[in-house]
Image 1: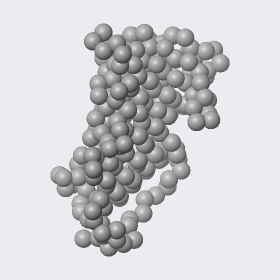
Image 2: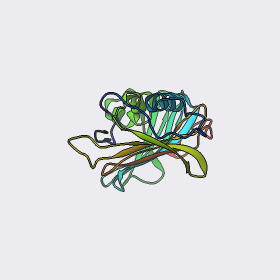
Image 3: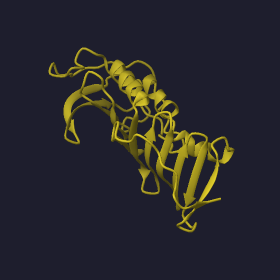
Image 4: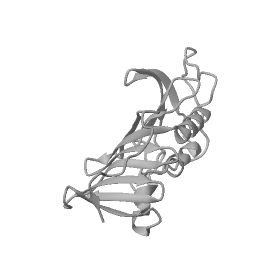
Length: 209
């Protein structure tokens, strides 16, 4: 089952061997194993031109980020009582945190050590690649509708140590699936929307220092 999905990395580390069952012949992914579906959806999401990821473990531990492939990302990160707006474009990072004047942003190079944790949230290959190693014996799947579109729900059982910690991964029910949602009981939910909607990232128009 999932280990906890920490906001700093959203790394999903799971155990070995996954088998699919309960699939529907109506699904274009019916012939694929659950492991193959997760790996393909993860790879397609990582390669997507852009998408928005939102959610978290609680209202005080959440993200709402739009990631544009090869450019960077922009959005909001909430950690405790600190709400940060982040814009990452190439080698430059702009950040505005709660308490700063509304028209002022901090600006610095993306190599700055203090922002690496934030930038990790904007790097799909770091965030999502561990999903390809997902494993859970007895995983099941079912055709469903998610946010108005055909989807496949991959339900992952709890571990022997934590049988109640069930989880799920939702992907589009298409020949080229992408991630729609990741959740685990007690540890939050993350949803993926807006595939291909964003083409660029714009720096703040106000002052920075």
